[in-house]
Length: 291
Ligand SMILES: N[C@@H](CCC(=O)N[C@@H](CS)C(=O)NCC(=O)O)C(=O)O
Image (cartoon, rainbow, N blue to C red; front, side):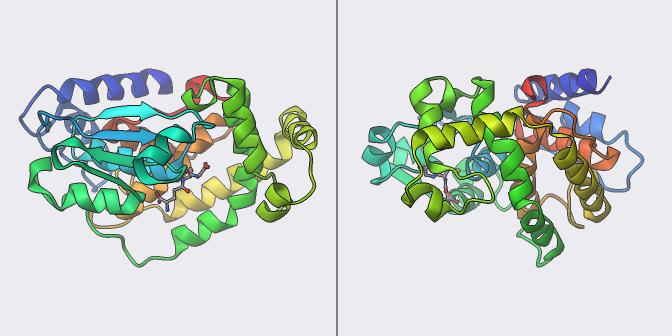
């Protein structure tokens, strides 16, 4: 039933891309909830003659921030997935290996830094109504929650990103190895993992062991943490009072990765929030490939 709902929401979101009237069909569907919070009405589709280009890694939450902003603002763009070991492409664009990278051919502009990109598309009338995403609130509880699950999520998510073999940046062995080489598993610290004397074989073994381990204890902890988060998000449409804001851009971007973990029990409001944000931003979740 949940999958059917998600499918309907995604199809509704893509159908609304062809209309210029508000409210969109997604919004109409989402408004049939009991919450007082109402769904965000997407502005009309923005299609520039020279489409903006966004270079990303699929798993990268900073990249998802930008995808969410472009989705909420309904801006058509070309989305290019970089292989995780591709150094020349990003280096030619911005001088180093990094994602996201946003290119605006009509201005001969190329830039990195997710929040700067979000600000740019929010403040430029060529991309539709400006400032439709409210500023971040000053609340600290969501940030504290994120910090509290950092290592737990690294342990669960990182091995799964590469183990699926399905994410575009990890289609080839070189991409998977580039990620494993540079991304530590707790309790290792980044410096020790990247600059210490660990061999690649040791790192591969640790990733394989993390995948082979019984996930039950970590899942139990994660499920508990999700209940805590469910208690502090404002509604199934946005996480802070007042409407969609930069808190949502960041929170959804980070929570999306959790959907790659099989067996997670999502509290109802939080799960609906994930499905709503996914439909609104046109950024799919990983449920179908979770492991
Ligand atoms: N502050 C940057 C951070 C971007 C970032 O750290 N991206 C990661 C991917 S999640 C990256 O490209 N790291 C370099 C690498 O993977 O080699 C932003 O918000 O855009």
